[in-house]
Image 1: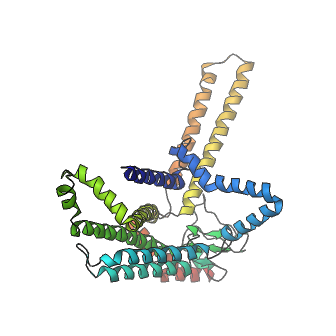
Image 2: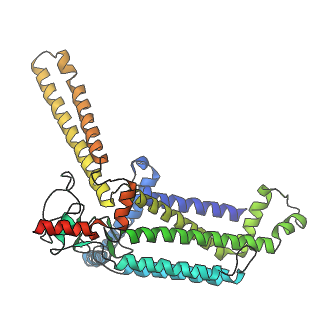
Image 3: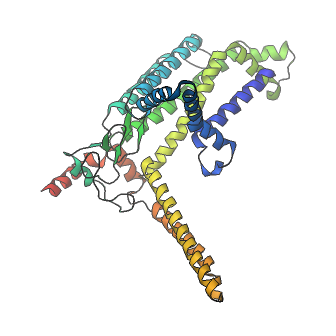
Length: 397
């Protein structure tokens, strides 16, 4: 019974940490333990560590840590790529070593030894494609082609020059400070890929996410079938009911079967739980990016629109406060009328109208051309189509 409670506690703690890390910054979790855990995991722990190093080793120790941080977080480096290969290789090795001896089994055929290896190879190929493909680098030679691809909306994108590259900035592009280049239809810089995700490699990135979700799900289900086969082959249920007098109900049998599996096949159980958690994370990440692709939006643009709405909210609140202050000052000089009494309310309502208007502008996406067309832009980027190159030639002429 104690083992079961330990497993439940472990699962709850893992789920809490994962939710806090990924979603703790959401407004719904404001003021909750999820927000505090998120802050500690993302900023707090590092901040306390930096203070500790400064207290023990002084400014020299702090400078060393900051230089390591600069190399790891602000410059291109293969650290996370190496970690990915290590995780992928070690997980497959442990799975093969601990579970392949039970294949073929009661539920799985011998073919799964080969399909699992093939699935891992495809995953690595997609990883390499995403890592080393051009995300859509904008330079002086091709900038005219990228400018003709998307129009400026004059809200979050307007005609201006990149202060670093000294070339015009196409709409939807962004200068990546880590890669030190402008990227067309910039989504985000992915540390795992050591590459930007942009117009030309979003399709590889999406294929990578989907395939790795399916790969982890395949591993979870396959190990589950292996364990179920062992329970069937060793007649565990029969032994428990006949020799130990356990009731044949699911409620009585399930805890004892799980306890037996944890004690006998703990490596497989840990691998299955790990793969299940990773598959859920990948499913959520893929769903988020799939929604962006279907609406022709990027991660960078979601942040830009959020900043735009936030700025408009602050401006409207400032205007409402100024109007209320002005009305209050005029009320002190003369007898307040019915008009001046409701002025503050009108100011607040107009501020609310400004917020609603800003939100409506953000939702009216200039680049959304319908789900089918949006997905086709991911698979066949606009800048690589013949029509786009013809437009840029006409503009240059």
